[in-house]
Amino acid sequence: MKRQAVATWKGGPRAGEGTISTASGVFDKSIYTGGTSAMDVPCTNPAEILAAAEAACVSMMVAKELGKEGITAEHIETTSQVVLAPDGDSWNIPRIHLTVKAYVPEIDSEKFEQAVKRAKTNCPITRSLKSEVTLEAIIEAVVPVV
Image 1 (tube, one colour):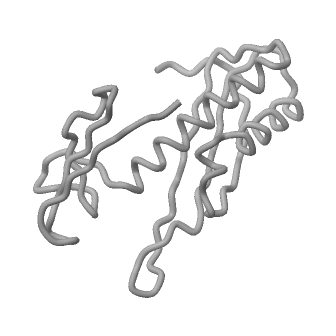
Image 2 (tube, one colour):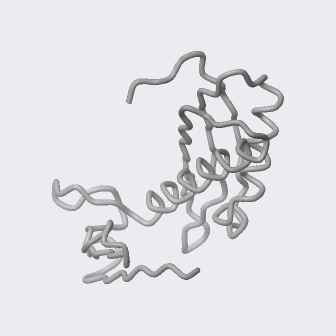
C-alpha cells in the first residue's frame, strides 16, 4: 500500500506558507505554516499533522489489538502531544506523549493497558519515528458524548 501527499511552499521559512494535498482529497490545498496561523486563516503545521497521524494510527491499532481478543471498544480517543524543540540551528521532535482513553465494556485495566502498549509498539507511524513516545491508558466509565 502506498499513500501520497503533495506539499508546496512559497516564501521564507518564517513568513512563508504552503499548501498540502492528499490523494484522498481530505487535504485539498490545506494551508500550513511554520507556526500555527497565517493571518487569522485556519491552518496547520507539520508537527500538528504528525500528531494527527500518530493519534489516528494508535487509535486504529488499539481497536485491532482488542479485536484480536474478541473485544470491541465502543469509543477510543487518542490524544497525541508532539514536543517540538530547538536543536542547534534546526528543530527536533524529542518526545511525543499519547493519552489513550476508551470505553470498553467488561475489560480490566491491566488487559486494556497491555493492548494499548502493543498498539503503540505495532503502530507503523510510531515505529518510523526516532522520538521517545510515552503512553497513558485510561478506561472511561461511560461512553463519551461526541
